[in-house]
Each structure stands twice: as structure tokens, then as C-alpha cells.
Image (cartoon, rainbow over all chains, first blue to last red; front, side, top):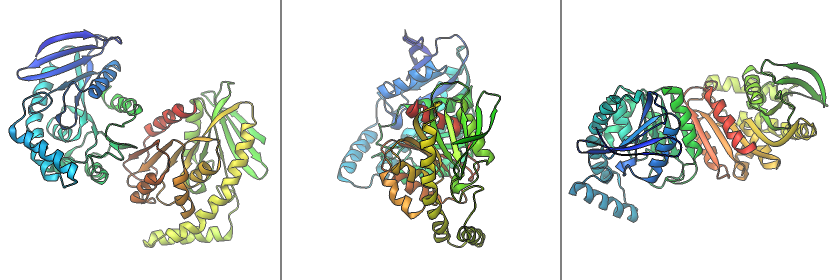
Length: 240
Length: 240
């Protein structure tokens, strides 16, 4: 893990860019030198690690005493995309605009995206836990499909917060029953890209007994700020 | 309003029993002398004001700086019940044990119970706001059907937390669209007495744009303690 830049933010949080082989990432750590619990924060559908809403969540979480890391995994963010992925994304936009079914198109690019991203997140987790300023335990926050895959394959993850979850690949819908860590599932009631009933069905399917659903009005990007604070208390209960 | 007893709890909260005409009630106020915001706390289906889970919620909420009041309204708690109400409750138990439909039976006693209880809660609110130690604004917590009626008829209520809501009388299901105050709707995912889909439909129906759903696993009495703390922050956002 090579750190390529470092800046200290107003609230003492240290924000560092890193590379780990081909994987670019960002790590936020609280100002104090103590060994912090870690939250892996992934943006839905592999959007860029530099996306402002993710960065705002990460900085706020780090200021609360967590190390927070995100990466652009294979095919995600600014990493090169396969011709097939690019075609699928173009097909998806066209189908959504035309009001056509999108399941098979989602499946064709989100399924492989999760398959390729998960091992890179695990490699990153290994490297992060080797840093003296990161102690664990480990939480996960964000992209539902990737989070399901990580929660069922990575025993070091102790609690997870998932967002949206209307479209999740078949493989992860199956795996949902194997998720047994405490879960906070965050849903926007009128999320244009995430059918509500499917998200509710997914919440119902998770195997864990300690799962909580939070739903708020509005579309995909309308999550109220207080949910970030509620999420913080969820992680505090399980990781601190 | 006549206070008939007073005790000071360990955390400084003052717990007073009162009567207001025929209405018996309990008022909890924080130890400090400041003019506190008020939360009206009602137990589902008019259960007794002395029910231990309600008392625990009330004491915790008062310790957080709120005046909290509850009453046994007409037909509720230990107040006399009409022969018709008693018959309906007996019919309900029998029907639920036999797995028969219960809508009409619920309607026949919960409908009138809300009709009779709501004016007594408003009378109590008048008396409470005349006390120097209570300042407002006013929140509501608990029984969904009564809360809907109060929220649409009582402009002094500024925020409401509702619990369960699977069985709500027809009149209040209609009124739900007129509820415009900020709302926290708390649902137990496997509440044996409150069908989940109906509760979700009711949440969808509320007219307010600022509504949040929290759902947790388990039956009617299984709400995790952290929901009381989440509820406290909801009221803090709107009443403090």
C-alpha cells in the first residue's frame, strides 16, 4: 500500500490517497493516534470513490472516530470498463428511458462487477488491517450487492449498512439468507431506480435476526442527513 | 388539574399522578425547573397508563428534558368499559384464537374508543399547557389510531411517533392523508397482531412529506431499546 497524497482536514481527519497494485483508494483516519475501528465504504454500482456524497459521508464518519476506506475496484469508478460493461450501461439507459424491463441488463453488468470487485476489497482489507492506525473491528457501508458478497465471504466484517437494494444480482439475492451480521438497511421510499417492493423483499430475506429498516420519503439522492447520524450510532453499537 | 401524589426518581425526574375531572393521568417532568417541551404518550388500544413499558419510556423521555403525560381516557386503562366494549374484546380474543377475520370486531370497539378518547386528550393538553413547568411545543408518541385523530384535529401537535398500525379504524385510515406533521413510524416486522402490509400501506398513506419508517425484527413487544433513543433524537429535531 503506497500513500500518494495526504491532507489534514479542519476537523483533524487525515485524508490520504493510496494505490495497492492496480487499485486506487482513499483512506480517512481520525486525528487521534488511537487504533480505530474500520468502515469499508462502497458507492452503489461501483461509482467513483471521489463522488462528493461518498466523500462527505466518509469525512463525517472519520470525524466520529472511524478509519474509513474506499477504492475504485476493477470496472468501478475511473477504472477501465470492458466493452461489454459499456454496452450494458448504454442499453440500461436506453431501456430505462423507454420504460422497458431492465433486470437482464442490470444482471449482465452488475453481476460481473460484484464478482470482480469483491476480491479487490478483500485484498484492500488485508492491507488496511496491517496499518498500525487501524485496529478493527470492521464494518461495511453502502452498495448493497457488494456488501452482501463481502458479508458472506469475509468473516472480519462485523456489521453492515446497506443502501437501496431494489436491483441486486440473482447471486446476491440468494446469498442474502446467509448474511448473519447486524444490519441497517436504508431505503428511499420513492427511489426511481430501486423498486420498493423488491427492496422490502430483500430486507425480509436477510438471514440476520438483528436487522433494522429505515425508510424515508423521496428519490435516490434524497436521504436526509440525520440518517448518517443514525448510521453512526448503529456502527457505534457494534464496532466500538 | 389536581395532583394526588408526587415522587422524585433517582435521575431527578418528578412523577406526579393527577386527576382532571374524571380523567386520571400521570405527568413526568425533568428535574430542572425550565419550561419543557411536552410529549403526550398513549398506549396502544387504550391499555393502562400504568403499563410498565409505557412508564419506562416516559421516565426515559422525561430524563432527556421533556414533560411527558399520559391518561386513561374514557374506556381506556382502568376506566369502566361499556358492555359492548367488553363483548367486542371477548369476541376479538375468540376470533384471533380461531384464526378468523378480526377487522369488523376491531372496528366495533377501537373506532368508538378513539372517538371517546380524543376529546379527553385535548382537554388534558389544555390543562397541561397552563402549567408553568410546561412550555411546548407538543409531540405525540404511541397509539397510532389516536395519534392520527389528534394530529389532524389538534394544531398544537408539532411531531408524532406512531407504533404498530396494522389495525387502525376506517376513519383514521381515511384521516391519515391529512396528517402533515413530521412523523416517525415504528413497526415490528413480525408483529402478530398488526399485519405488516397494512402498516406499510398506512405509512405510505400519511400526507406528510417528512416521514420516516423504522422496522425491526420480532413481535409486538420486541422493539429494541435503541429505538427509544432514536425516537428521542426525532423529537429533539422537531421540539427542541
